[in-house]
Image (cartoon, rainbow, N blue to C red; front, side, top):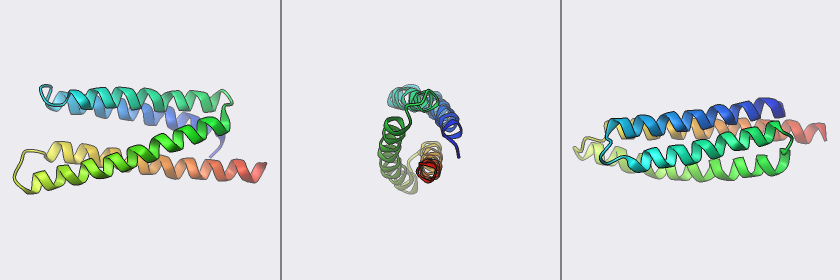
Length: 125
């Protein structure tokens, strides 16, 4: 994937995180304010990494995007595990568990795309 491809990918990933934050908030506005805030924050940040990559920020932006996404992978792994355990214990957490798991899958896919892009950049250097 080229620099332009990964830049567009991260803009899309940012929009995806924003949409997931909105969906989480819409599912339970009283208790899911953090879903909206974290989706907005990390969605915006990821989209900014994408724009920075497109504008030629290359390595600093790729590193920032990678570190942010790795942090999100760890967070989503922990939160999805906790949500699935709560659902298994009979709590109404199915939507949250599915949503966080989908966010984890999107984050892992983003890391894979970022690694492919970085490898391509290194081979051209």
